[in-house]
Amino acid sequence: MPATAKAAAAPPQLSPERARLADAIDQVVRWEAWLDRLAREGTTKATAAFGAADRRVEAAKVALREASAMAARSAVSRLLGADTDTVDAVAQVRADLTDAEVALNQARLDSRALESEIDSARRELDVARAKRDEAVGDVLKATPAVAAMLAAWHASKARTAAIGAALNVVAPGLPNGWNFERTSPVDQSLVISWRAKLEALASDPTTSLDDADNLPPEAA
Image (tube, rainbow, N blue to C red):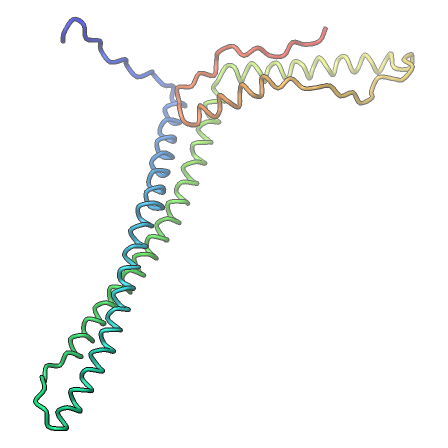
């Protein structure tokens, strides 16, 4: 290896949960690609094949009518003593029509098979997405930042309950009591941050979830 060349960076070591998520994401990507190909390329080709077969049938029907009319005129000419060609063009055109109708029926069958495969791929994609979402949940369960938020939530609930119990004791001395509805704007920064992380995690199993999001400070 030349001295100036750099070795390719080793892929990040994934935890078991993130490794399962990577596999689940791969399945989603594969089924999305397959469904997209069926919907675009498959539908385009099936539509073109059906259209060509249908036009072939219509052309064969026109040719059969013309051949039948010509055969009728030839029969009349022979009846009147004319020397006419006795080649049976009607039989050949009728055979062409039969072949065209077989091709049209096959095109219908192919279209139905494509529709069935698209429906099947959609179901498989739904299953793959559900497994991916489940894998995302497993990653979250093993994420310290999520555990820290849960701990902070339970601590704040316990603190609120303790303060509420004390306020119940002093409530008789308060002019308006204390247990009345108060509304205040909710800080959405943490919500926005985690939504962005989960959206990234759904397509990239290496997405960091432990970059020290600050929890909203407790009021003194």
